[in-house]
Length: 186
Ligand SMILES: [Cu+2]
Image (cartoon, rainbow, N blue to C red):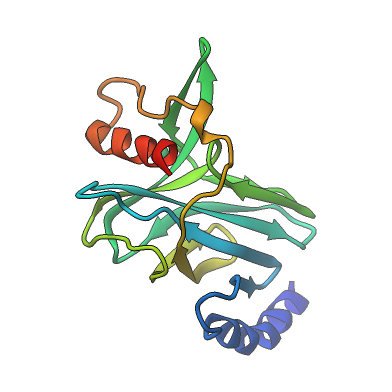
């Protein structure tokens, strides 16, 4: 896939330039055949230990890629999560094996669906601030993005019982209820 390498080389400087846009401008990061749009996370309430990050990932290429990992200095652990309906209750679970972005398609991480759970935060997340996050894709490799901390609009999370998790699935159930309530209170 020689042309892909060349394309990436051409896009790399653009990527750096995009990362330097002033805060307040919606972020869009290009990396190879992928575009990452509007990475954002919820501010923490009080001493809430966790938060969640969202974004839209578009794959312009002819082959699928997969988000297989996430890292950020802002949290001791970052996991991919999915919200799903089980017996009329919305629950979330960790996504094992990654989130596939099909060829010529987009996957949106948004409240009520896929999200990146930021666990055991090292600092408070305040509205208007930004932090760095590194996305790890199966084919594209590492893609750094800057995540803007924003309050969520009316996106329907009020219908969700996000804290009703499978017992023992994770050690952060408390934090999840904070994360959940954050969506309701805003
Ligand atoms: Cu979650």
